[in-house]
Length: 113
Length: 112
Image (tube, rainbow over all chains, first blue to last red; front, side, top):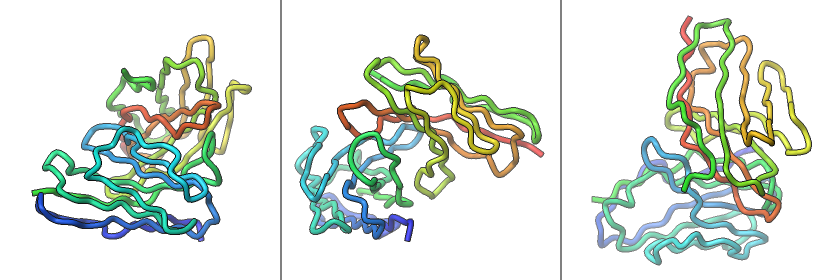
């Protein structure tokens, strides 16, 4: 299995809602990432988990809360988001953190009303 | 401040000709560079990479060239095919192990 699976593909939520994005990989990768991509912009790093521990948090607002329950799963919990948080959220994994090839999922398209 | 720059937002090429996509970087600590391809509604897909100890890496129709003194890399696609039409992202990382830093992307259109 060489895929990173993200659910849901599309999510629409209000500013008071609580929702979660999920990511799963079964490649035995030990680093997992959340990136955010807005239209016509490059993917921007949000969080990195290495061996299930949060190793990088790129000053992301606390309304985004990552969780890594085990080495195969990565969640992004969303609460009290703003319309400007609407974007494509990409999950990725790699063998380890550092100069490794990242395998990306197809992304979750989030719209905040 | 952008550390990885792709200054051409778009490139149009005829089928069978060469496509050259360019990328510049500012951080001299970067030592590993990758190219990703992205189709609409899909995640980026890894294409080819190069380490700073090399100046060229080739994989089939795709060749990446690295000029460290100029802090410049380029991706050559020969021959270009309509299926190559996509957004191409240049990315870089450093020895400290931070995750990839991406450029803004270049949209390649290959016409038949």
